[in-house]
Image (cartoon, rainbow, N blue to C red; front, side, top):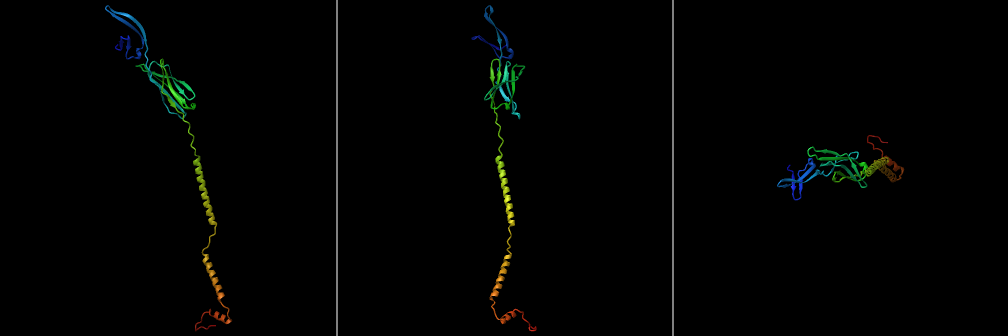
Length: 248
């Protein structure tokens, strides 16, 4: 076959390039060579078991957090033999540890006969109130494999922004503008109700005053004279007559 070797020091028989199909019951016969020929000195049966280690399980999110606050996770491990016994998720929170057993999906290669396995889980965030660490556990006949931790952080909902300062500032600005407009209108109304002073009458009044003073001064300065003097004064105001006219 070309795939066996023997170590005479340790009496170890090795089978190289082991494949899944090499498993089974083997009979080992030991002969001793003598001049007369080969003599069987030992015989034993050996059941050969073939194991292929699975890869370390890996958790991958296959969808982001949906509107319903769900996230879908899948865990997979490949190229192992024989078929594993169990595959599950281990959810660890601050106060609890929960194991979820799902339906293990498996497929086997037709040539190598190795198995690929996977499992899925849908995590509901309304049921989770704190941060969570998730592991994937693969249980085989001989070993127990754990995936690297997958962390799920629960974000606290952000409070809605407080618009009270902006609303107060806008209302204050509106009130100030209304008050300014009201005061301006009130000032205009008061200004219209005030009587206008007539500056044109003053010169007239002054002229009248001067004329009155002149008349008074005339009356004061006219001395009392005799009737003859008054007659002369009055005659001086009559128009002069021409030589051709007869004056009376």
